[in-house]
Image (cartoon, rainbow, N blue to C red):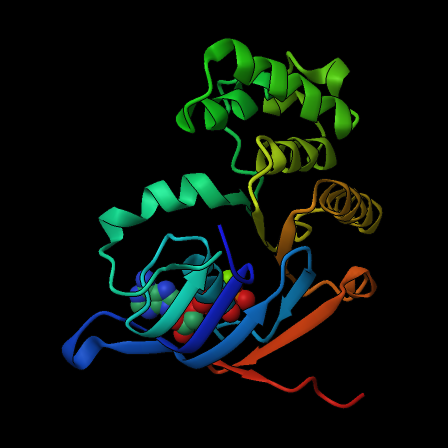
Length: 229
Ligand SMILES: Nc1ncnc2c1ncn2[C@@H]1O[C@H](COP(=O)(O)OP(=O)(O)OP(=O)(O)O)[C@@H](O)[C@H]1O
Ligand SMILES: [Mg+2]
């Protein structure tokens, strides 16, 4: 693992082909240093989720160069991406995306088992991270028995479990009230600082902007300078 957390040069992403082709990213140049806590903001449809999906090894770039901790992401087929995703990425989604039939512990442990942890080690790490997000007492609860903020804290625990070097969050506070949104983001920032994760949060939520080390603005598939206030 070497180099900055992420480097992109002239990255484009086109969905579909022929008459239906749509270019969602039109040449993105971006460097993210290790340990940064970034926010990505921009209008609906500007390409935020697309950019996050490229960083998260869910989609491959159509052209340009992208490196995740020094490893090239371009020139790979999408079937070559899951191993990279497991190694480098923790995800937090807008809806918590927890599996409804699994307890908090099982939701966190499952991701770790996919990474090769034994069941026992996965449960141990799951309890550790649930403790860190203040939910050890809810470890046997199903998602439906947790509040929205608690579910999103389980999602944070799942994303940081096993210390993936890059944590990506797509509008993690969108479904939360102001207070829970602030709590979840503050918690994520504290844990990332302590564990040394690099974090990128997509958000429309101006109540949490001040927590960012740097804010990246995207418009119509391009990174743009911040709008003047
Ligand atoms: N699978 C797809 N096939 C075709 N076009 C797509 C696909 N996914 C996204 N797009 C298009 O690419 C553009 C960027 O979409 P994206 O989801 O990245 O935007 P976004 O900034 O995350 O928007 P929002 O804030 O609404 O979530 C949009 O015009 C969208 O319609
Ligand atoms: Mg989106």
